Length: 102
Image (cartoon, helix red, strand yellow):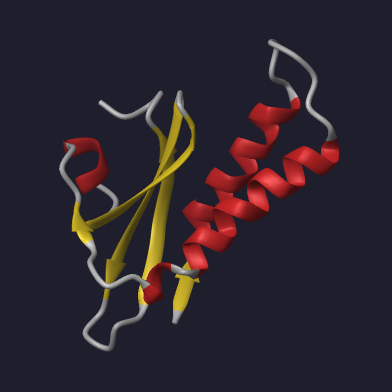
């Protein structure tokens, strides 16, 4: 089972707000909804992947022990950071982009 933390819900809302106010060009509400839904869909598929990669960056390690890299386009990768309990349940703790990771 996959669960989204409150922080993850805040992150998704922040991503939505960022897309709504993006200065390069205006994005349609339909595009933004689909974009966010794609990220959520990836989160809910985490329990189906066979290998879970350990977090590498110190920033990521603050939020969880595992990371899934979701590349949206050549310039943007979303890092979905999560933990797995002894029963195989996944708690997504943080979603952050390659533009923030250090």
